Length: 294
Image 1 (tube, rainbow, N blue to C red):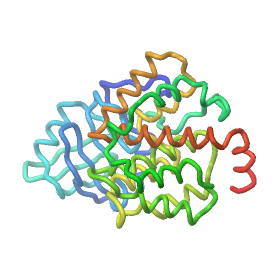
Image 2 (tube, one colour; image 1 turned 90 degrees about the horizontal axis):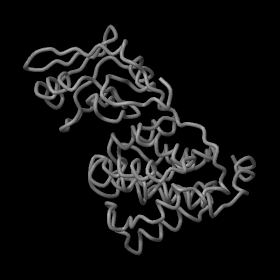
Image 3 (cartoon, one colour; image 1 turned 90 degrees about the vertical axis):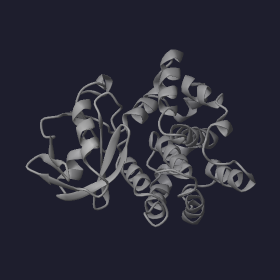
Image 4 (cartoon, helix red, strand yellow; image 1 turned 120 degrees about the horizontal axis):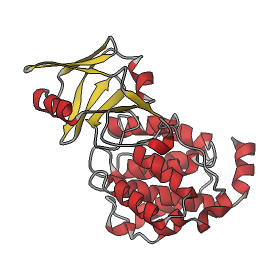
């Protein structure tokens, strides 16, 4: 399935999913929501959602009726076994199987873009984001201390390990929810950077700093997927917008992203805008610096 053919209302799986599942056999139900659940295999999560929803970077979307049956049957910590190309859910209400091998695979690797760093300020996406009043919709209070670290995100040298660590320690786990707002900001920021360069020192600092003793496993897994080059369908669409001039498409996608979680979508968009601003502030020289420093 091509990136231009991402569609809902059918069973699909992320192309990251088989890489996760081949390494794990025994898991458990980690968390349940109205529209899906997370299955934990050691340090990995699999998100099982409905066929009418956007696909997670580590996701598997199944028929709505099948999902409803599972949600009504299983409880947190119920055993899940990965065996013979199926997920087997064991609950007090019986056993339910998801046969995932033949489910269509969707490519959720970050797409290549045509836009250059110098062109960012002229894009419809950048200008649309600049007009959002994020202070009113994000889940973190932009007090003096937070603004100081936002400024560091925008202006610090991402080859400076110590400053990177200081920034990451401030944002990691900050805020409420299964993916705290500070984590979402870091993920959005990093998503923007990865569109234009490797930034290996920043990425290594993130990998070292976003851990289960600092934040939630869900944040850790989202970040891990991103650092491997995978993102949820919403964010694949967001990346593609940098090359899009259709205002209606930009507006529709931004609103879809904002609908994700309580404030998670807006938090990620705020971080994404900060990443684009950082790149713009650095100008065309950032590619040269990347080659020298990384």
